[in-house]
Image (cartoon, rainbow, N blue to C red):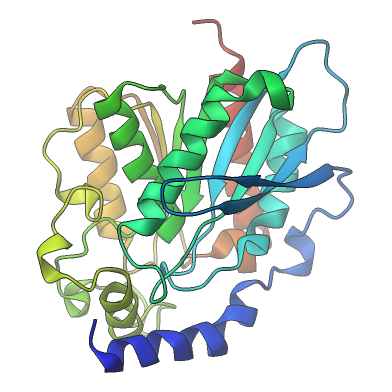
Length: 299
């Protein structure tokens, strides 16, 4: 990676990191009691710290488990930005939630985040008995960059056959890293994402241009989607990445993957964090209720 993209990415980390962890006060769900703990998972790309959210209600059997990957353009490491989502899902879906603090660029570019995301999920699937969750009833999901990692984890899991998630949640994902960001249009004049910030994110995360079209980097360009887990795909009407999210939902469905796709009208990306509150709550509840159905269904 050249010196300039690295400096630009570090600037984004310093300027936007704190802002990215802000959540609308009416979306924080601080009234939901949740037990949390920190664990450290060893991966092929170094140790990863995760926050574990456990539902407050005692269960006779180990609860199913959901692995969450936060957003931030692969550059901002703020897993606490998803605290409200993890809290709500643990309580509403009745599952253990693992919020993953994966490494970010420019310090740790691709493929480090993908390797860590997969290895953590595989560890969660394999180590349920020792941690009081049911690793055989597992789902994975994420937001923005975390949704891209979710798609990568599910693809790798399919190809390796090590475990099979019951659901993948793809929320406002960057799925085509090849297309010029300037060609990604929004229905509003000033959407949250700008072509400049998108270029900074991509240059930091994928310094080798030859990797941009790799299916673990650009899942939306892959043509072999059959056999992937059922998906909940969420897009936002005013998001520059809406079109590629919509297209991915259609491609999954065409490949025979069961898909629930919801485009929320009148909102931009990260509305699940910054509002509008009614749409944010509806989307988070959709995630939780879809997870609950997927994780508790007999198979």
